Image (cartoon, rainbow, N blue to C red):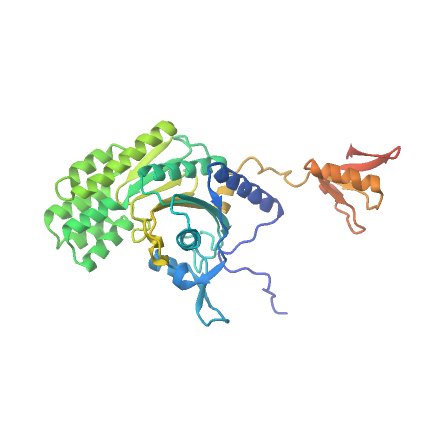
Length: 395
């Protein structure tokens, strides 16, 4: 007899069963309520779009993640979204006429053609928020603050022992590369080595460079730690790439603000952090916790992505996978989630139906027993008739 594999899911694609699904949805609602209280408007981008708009701004990385299908009506290529951020940028630039600041938020499933990293889900539920139309550092600070509030609501505290805020600015490396006037091929190799934190590869690439710049890039690759590294970085780039100083000063301003807002948070600075280098245009940030090997939320500034849609806009935002955040969501992660159910007999009795309706309005779960219901262990209370009055009794 041949094995029946029809039940199998693709590698990296997972399902969420009842108890976890209830927790997941509860967290999603709480986060959207949080964003609403901060003034962010909810948007619902489509599941699929033409690739011309879906892949704007994020380049080859997003292209490799996107599952593509031909549109049988137009013959054009469509993609199933792998990231909601470009879609939200399109909506701000093309579908919304507001000339001022737009604060938008979202929560929805995405699909990846392959895992972004080892062990990561190919079917995340992306949740996040974006600010469009504001170029100031205050917008970056607001988004970082909201990202940390998102993490806190999910169950992690912004203390030194629980959470680390990782900060960088792609402008530092961009300014140095511009001052060094490298060939495009060499520049790409430098960026690649910095992304991978590979000092040996970086040393090999830098052998043909001017010695002063080679030393600076090697020093930059090692410049990570607490906020004090910014002083060293400032001295390092001041003479050869003055424009990089502005990026460093902006990071200092962000750190000063976060110290006031969240005095207990652990801040880690990495000036060679080039996540989304070809996409981000300024500060980049991420939240890490010691018992999880990847960022639990991340984001950054990505100005001018909307220009292809006819409106160039400043933009900054963050995103996270709701399934990852759920792992830290403690308020509902208990064994009895979903088990507090009242059993009621199946009947058309108006008094019974009225009693059930009142209980459900109060947030109780009431199940009318069907003939085949035999899982009595799921019920902890029962509706019973006592002198023509329906009352709830303990099991």
